[in-house]
Image 1 (cartoon, rainbow, N blue to C red):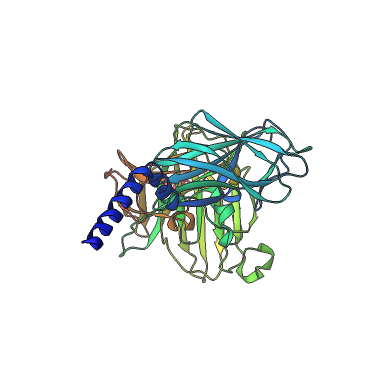
Image 2 (tube, one colour):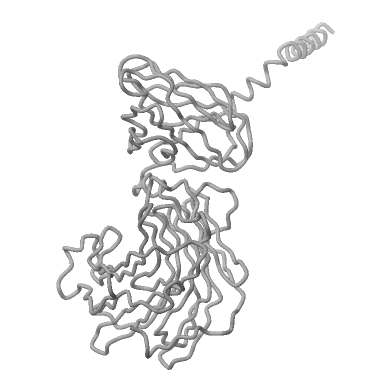
Length: 436
């Protein structure tokens, strides 16, 4: 009986302890399930306001002098939550203060150590999907604001956070450029395709600097339109060399792309970094909302080489323009791997959205018969495939496909989705004999 009373007393005491401490237990349990996520600014931050006195390097934000500069960090949450935020940083000498801003709310953080430490502010209410936190300077340490390496988040252990996590294979650079996306058209297997035709329309305000809207892609090159600067746009046509290198100077004479002809005012030369070969471009102020036409011929010369020729049709001009004709040595092929893509080649503009409509795709075989390409497989580059960024999508709009990337929007579709646009059934009318 005495033992029984002792047990009852112990149980009652335990229940009383739980009741008394009940207000602390949930918080303690919550802290036990939190994890710290460190988002490197080197791969996830952009200068979104100011004159860019600071630099975003592989170390983060450093040499930040001007108070007008503001940096924005983007990341994606699986679910909405109240999230404690912070930074990892250091100062040169005296303390400096920065401000974190999200959805109109702001939190100040004073960075005081000359060695890197973590500093925390109160929680922000963050939403499911992509979030943006802005970083601005309040007070300097000497001539510069604090050097920052990471944005810090305290999130639930089970919360998934999407961001560019490491710099393997130069991920910081490619991650800041954003995901490149492609449409791979299904080519009939029983034909030798000589000509590839397609149309391209870039909607208004979907053309930030650094955009490449590529219409006619093939196994050995690509042809499309670029935004190279605030006042410069180009129509670009390139063919890779059969010699695999990123340095054009390494290509042996026998494997160099040979220019056979170019259109008036077309610039030609070599390119490198992403393979090497022959490049041509025409500076032309193409416009958003206008549909442009692209025509590429690929034909073996019966001497072990292949000739590549591209033409561009601007409705403002009303005629086809020759961009260039190249000979690719040691190559004997007809059209292969027809595709289109959308990419950003300016890392500083990877936070901006771009979009294009791709339509009316056809190939013409060597006998002169047209074949409409209405099916496409949607694919993405490494940054998209490994899940470091998810701001990409594709689909169909009336009789066209579309591609969209950048801007950290939430709606997307899975890589490798199969798409099919509405059939047009009427091939393009082209007088091949009158092409320049």
